[in-house]
Length: 78
Image 1: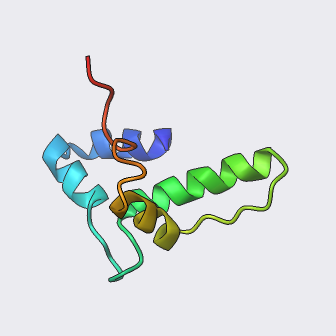
Image 2: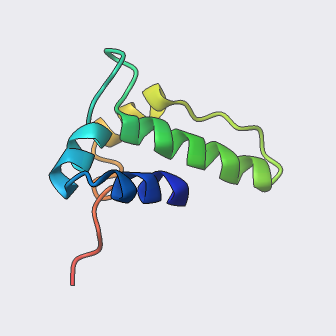
C-alpha cells in the first residue's frame, strides 16, 4: 500500500484525482479500487494469522454499502 501511495505522489496526481481513481469501479458490481485494496489487505492479515483468506472485493463492497465500514476509508476526526 505504501508503494502505491508513493507512486501516486510521484505521478504528481492531485488528491482529488487519487480519490477519484480509488472510487472507480473498473468492473461493474465487483467493487471499487479501494474495495479491491481493502480485500487484499484483509486477506494478507488473515493469512498472517493462519486463517484461510476469504475476503474479495464484492464482499468488501457489500460491507461498505451496508454501512458496516462507514469510515474505513476516511481519516480520523480531530
